[in-house]
Length: 88
Image (cartoon, rainbow, N blue to C red):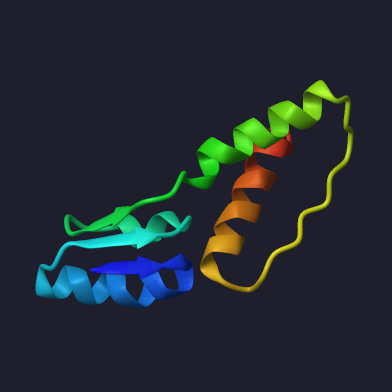
């Protein structure tokens, strides 16, 4: 099965796992890849967010704004952006 985007994958992933059917989610939300039958087919946020932040840093940006939808892919991406952008 191939699902598109995180909201579709979040529905398909548990069904694919339960029925032992391979599922490839075109999505960002890492929870869609849980289990041995679920896989992601997009660059996950932990990878692309680091590239975005590096480019912004090279331009000297001090502040950024992030906007997203209340769906799992946007939430995962913004959470990763917060994690990487805010020093511990």
